[in-house]
Image 1 (cartoon, helix red, strand yellow):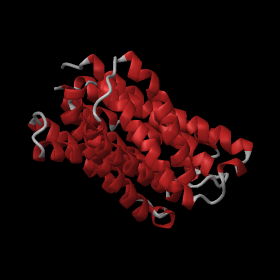
Image 2: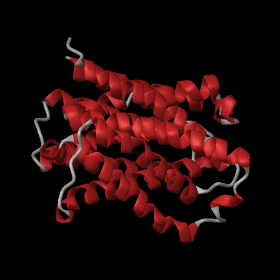
Image 3: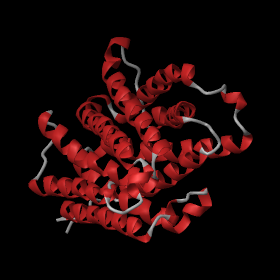
Length: 294
């Protein structure tokens, strides 16, 4: 069994993602809204990547060359907005495991775009992760918690993020990570200006308590996303990275049960059968990770 050390990064990101999702969900209770949350998170992400430009020796390119970062930036923006919509409509313990379907989409996009090899066991692992989603529908309370809409939004988010991951694996090596990611996230931040007309109220109208949650959530999501894109940019292997990252499905159910009350999250009070079904479904994703290690 061989576990490349760089895959510890997406494993750590699985925990960062769940903490970020719980924090963003908590910010929503203050009426922040999806569009203001996305706007703040994207500008935090850009600020986080400015030092990376210098650390990795990034170079400036002619303006006409920035089409590739612009495309992957749109994929990222769409994935993030859909993710925040899913979190606003449903439960963290549903949204996060459904995001595990990203692994099968990454494998599919990798095959279609001829980006690296996708071994048979990775296909099996991706399918195992996706099949676990069925268990999220089990339980007598699920139908009352907009599971269908949450699953649809999270699946679309996974597709957008997945396409972006594969395109980054395809394009970043020619640029270098330090030259690619800072302008990409600058573009993501600029794209976010399109959200301003949809704000429920100006940012200055936010309650100070809301700012604490939205900034904390943005920072956690920035660290999570930075870890994933840096891993893809330096080592590649989008399918393997996303299969390991899918552990967040299991982590989400465990953390919601263990510390969800710290974030005023009520999911731990679901019927025991509902959480057990979600836990079993998420645990299947661990089998997918094992297939990557073989």
